Image 1 (cartoon, rainbow, N blue to C red):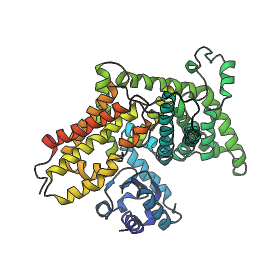
Image 2 (image 1 turned 180 degrees about the vertical axis):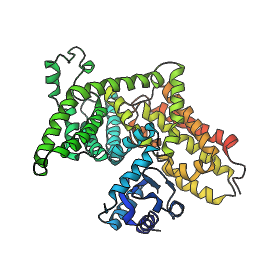
Image 3 (image 1 turned 90 degrees about the vertical axis):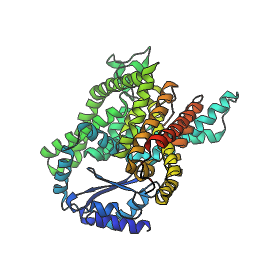
Image 4 (image 1 turned 45 degrees about the horizontal axis):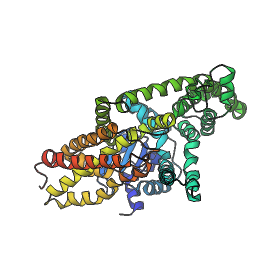
Length: 463
């Protein structure tokens, strides 16, 4: 079935285009918000050829695999045309009802995921370019070469654009998520990285000349956490202003007053507060995975072992702000490579299942098709097609990933960016730690195979 046919089937099972409110996608999933969930035929939707798994959430996540999610989402948008808002009020009520049944933690992670999912293609592209350039720059430096080839500078130029202005992108997406004006959200992001903030900091005695990074207020203080908080307040301020400002003055006064109020709050209150919050997050990570001794090993195991459950419900993208906090504070990330080990456990587990399921050709076909992309760091096809449906392999894969994560935490493996996992993340690993990352993957592969082979394969695997 081609992508257009799949898109038509999805729309039909979702209750036709009149029931669709929003269509988005990430690397492997088409994410759809519907106006009336009772009109969705989840059973038939899950049985459409080409669909790996359907996850019922406040947004319906249709897992179709890497390379297909955007194409199918684009086809759906073409077929739906301009999405009707005739039932907008009912849809919002339904969405609010669904969210009221969720835990606050999962709701926060989900909203963070909604902010960062549109940025994932750029994060992957820019991250890999930076990683490749950084790797060869370090190789040339070790060889005593001072004048770097022009292609390295070119790659760094292409890769640095996103991360240099990441706050602006986050501001725009946060505005879309919270209901603020996207351009104003981008301005709030830009404010946080303005060099003029140093002038205000020095004037108010908030600047630490001896150790600038320890200042209460400097450009980038609080990172994207401050941007998200600021834009959430911006959305509220805009709504309140529009209740009292006449329509003919709304276009002029609302943006100006909103920026004046929220911009002031962002610089003098939100950024210092977010800076304290970021420091607290760093202390927690330092305690669990950056400390010496057994606590780092335990922390690494727990974090890596808990990643597949987050991936299962689509909350894994909500961890991106934590990557950015580490990247801003230290220039490197220790959490990301630890979590990458979860996919290694799945690969080893799937290999064990493949060997034992000699008479289950359908399952072996799924493993053969899912294995290449799993090795490259995209684990959803393997998760929904193999380990999760079988039950025990999901648990054994999580344990194996935890063992790899424990090793990486013990050896202090870090990356200079974040992006795809698996072997694709190797260029992102800082020099001197690439071998440890590879060993960690090997531990996950071997542990996943061994634990699953002896304890995780269901007895009826060949039936």
